[in-house]
Length: 468
Image 1: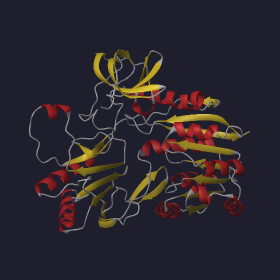
Image 2: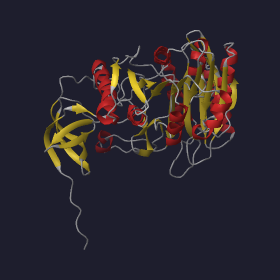
Image 3: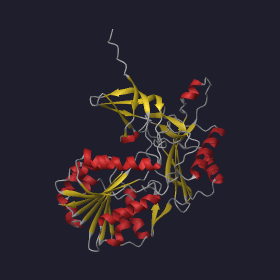
Image 4: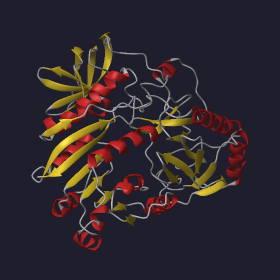
């Protein structure tokens, strides 16, 4: 007989003392750090340990002895099951406090980076209904809550449309109302789900890779334009049937599109988007500028706060009329076009070719003639030959994905050695890691945390680096 696996311990009456990354909180037990889900500082709980590491444990609460005085009632009925808004039980002022602390800790405590000036976090104009894009998934495996399971009720057909349960790739929370996007998003999602059920349309089975309805993306603009992209597993007559029904119910949709995706993953970047009704794009505005947003384009999902973020980045960059600026990871050229009026020339580089096409269109739309855009992998495009051809930049603006920059890109930046680098990041941990690799050549003059995603643990940060 094999040795019986030892059960992880239950630690009783631990006080939650701080907030950690990824929405978890911190308790201590015999000088060991315990990361706990679903709690906030001030809670006193029993914690069931689920994972044991050498330096820390992870766990979840099984019993609350005391709720934190800071705790508030979450708005959303799906809180605690849907993984989207993990901080709804924290007052917004406390969310800002812990996000600000998280950024500073990543720089000073973990990255050992000296910061000359720390600006207080910039609060979002709206703490609900601030997103301009949401993606929903269809599944024939609705997630059942503990209460539903224990009710003894028979649940036959379990078709759902909503968000994935954290760490459950095949289970979907059947979302009734989401507080993150304009209410048209809720109305469209609920209509599509009901229409599909009433007309016996198959919901996707991710394990078997079969079904019909797969995903749905809703995008909207500040001016009230609406884009809907419905993703189907296969083409058949039901595609026209459901799209016609959607358009009849919601004639205010300005761009109705569909995608056929038979692949084993949900990405549509390599697939054709078919425009079914209306325009094939949205027009977004930021200050005096207009931006074309195509179905596959990246555009900051919190438009109002993105405008504030870009204004602060421009302030940090302090660009003069003779400056050559590189905008790395430019996306659809929002930053490049936003700063172009202050610079001599702006050069944008981005991996996604379609995004670069939109970046060029966005320059044309706004009569901007001093931008130039290149498509390709950053570590391959940005090299000494590229700099020799296009000129050495005075300022480089960086806004990479969550994973941060490739080591080759960092090495190239150090060789180029521009006078100033403005580093914008949606992940202060990888941002601090990257900057710590450059601190021999660059000092961090100032940082500005920006809250782009209220009710979540995510935080953006702008850092200004100057050549020593």
